[in-house]
Length: 274
Image (tube, rainbow, N blue to C red; front, side, top):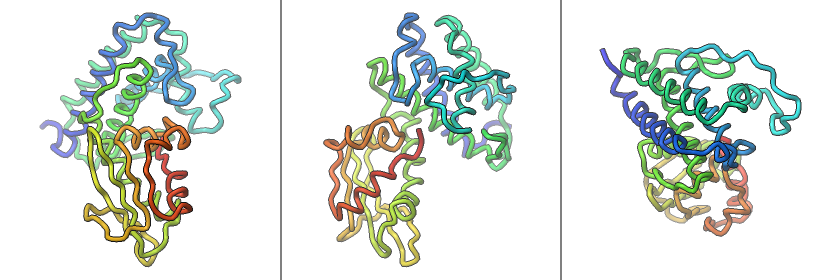
């Protein structure tokens, strides 16, 4: 048996992004690994360490036994402590150590994917001692690695792959989060519609309809007389949704029409992940 067809797009997206990351960091001088990225508080080395750590966990490797320093002021909760462990344990690794470990992990993960024959619904280990289906795990991982590829591109001044297989996965993940953002977090009016018009390397027009019970659904049909309309480019959409830019810094790239209280509430709750 081979990889289930449902899982293939996520494997392809991960492969495309991880190869791009490897290509980006392979030629870096030692000092360039310390460049700041848009990922809050993390350098290039930190982001690559995080990606390595995530793939090690996808492989089922044990987590490192490591004590975090007390002066990591950006680490304030258990989730951040969990994520920081794989990062901090590599903070003093040299450039050759980082690239060698990355390449070795890529080789192992490619072998794992070639031999993967489990059903997409198989339960697998996830962070924080939880479980996900294999499909959920691979989808989330493809999304995360693409987002971190974009972090590295921003830090290194190497834009690209905004329409890659990973970007397609990211679009779907972020769109899936919109109904809850609009209907629950922003408390949009019942029996209303909110439109998102996104242009650029990835384009889409989507409507969130809020029903009489206050539940939000994602639709492709345009809405007549929406309560609010947002027009922005794909890169800005991603950076806002992933917490890579503040609302104030992106204000000139987002056109929001409709009730100011509603549009403000939606944008304040727009971040899906950091």
